[in-house]
Length: 245
Image (cartoon, rainbow, N blue to C red; front, side):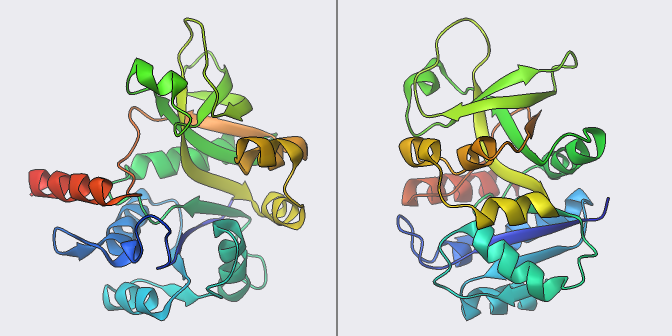
């Protein structure tokens, strides 16, 4: 297995425009994500950038970035476009998609995501979940829940479904974390397919993969990483950076 980590990023985020370059403790957010990915040892790392400003920031920090069409509709489209330039001969058979808004993601989580694809031959796509943060998560439609067939080790499981709906019962509720590891052929198949009925209903693109018959497995992280989607999230990230320093 020969993974590559690609981080899609664009300036035109709806809720927080320009967030890849948002300053967090003196470091642009995209550079913090890049450093965490590099520390994982999962493979070479590159940023699939929708804007030249992002490319400039990454290259200034010594990283690698590829400029992609800013009008691409999704992160997975951006990753495929970058992959065509970074690896046109298909040397990398696994692609890790790390969102560019997780500035403090634990490198071990990325390594675990990649490791699932090595450990589970039937796994087409690997992802990550974390325990619910509070009982309120169960009914919060903004918290995407993963329904897993958990393995005896309690650290991995096959994903049966993903939902925004309320989950009941005494079993653990797993928050889905937007990190994906794709076998290259699975990524191509996923991107070639139109949005599926369940995907449109739940507004969750991973359901397209399940409807295509692709197998998704999840690694269990101890906690969900900080994700920056709003101005309030950004302030929380800056406070966390101050605490670390």
